[in-house]
Length: 516
Image 1 (tube, rainbow, N blue to C red):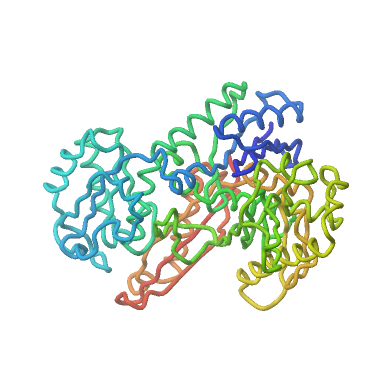
Image 2 (image 1 turned 90 degrees about the horizontal axis):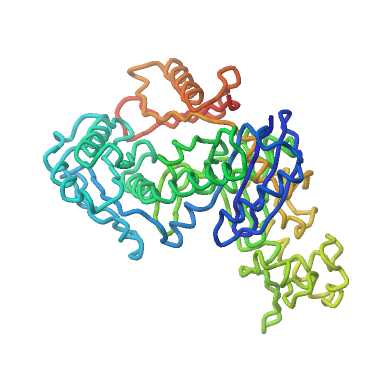
């Protein structure tokens, strides 16, 4: 039986076939098309033909896609949302979407702040105003396509959020998508609420890409495969989970590359540099999984606090345009020829000097016709490479937690533009199949369970609390589809909260296991 992994990037759509021993059987790169499904279908057909396998022998198919990110950034295909915040009168001083860009505020058709909510210790601020919620749902019925619900301190206690979600479905219909903030974000009402709104707005996008992928597989005769979507912690989720929490697919491309880089290099702790055609993503492997960011994530101008990988992205790629400025400086990017590199770069007969042309000129790569790059001035090429080197070294330094040298793994089709002697590194490796590390990361990913709760160690001993948290995380991983015997605890975070009474800590545990 085989696994199929597909990752849709801004420049290329990568596809791989992996066998039962997790060995790469075939890999392809295909330019990403305006209609992403055309690119997916072409990559799918090419990789199966190259592998020479029976389509019915593919038992699992995994997709990593940028469609949710693109929908938010481009403000396209977003559903109309109704928002209920539970927290009057305590939270009325800061209205919903107070710091959102104007062009995306329109995604919320109507909103209300009703009485209710909790204190930091889980005690009710005031009784939930069910009548106000009922009136709101009747008002927006037929006007909105999904609902977001947030509540002050719902990460400690979410009873009122769940009650409002049940009330919504009673009035607006069981099929109404409801995004509950406590299931998506972390501490901090505004950022968590923002994440819930964006998740609700992505309802139509999620429905389209899950159904589209399933339809593409069926069209190609892949009828025996279980379908999974990549999420941004380096693990997989089911189609149903992806429809419920589409926001968790944001930034899954870089995390797929990180997982793929770890698998290909056999390094469990290092920095990964994923160079595409337009951008380069820098991330960190910690225990074979992406390191999570501790900072709030800003997506399309909206500040959120749901989990995101610790990634630095810069405008550097194989198609980055190289120029000499009027003051004599040489610049690389941030603009790029992108997927047009095969027609516009010098080595492919074009007229634009790209970072790939510089690498070919300096003998670092053999792509296209190297003779076409011979006309580049030696000094110009050397200056351009120093700019590229400096950009990479600065980002690597930014991700370090200490001043020591680190292992670096280069992946992505554009990684040929980077030198191997980068300052601050102990070794720089470019593993086999590096060009499709993102698709490989998607195909070999595990499924996970994540548990987060505020726990007062005066009420329950710390050892007992952590043990129960680990058991719950493992249970959630199994529930998501992991084989019980393969589940392991990947990460444990225990952060004391000084502003809470007693010995309260925020406990986060992540478990992951192989697909059943």
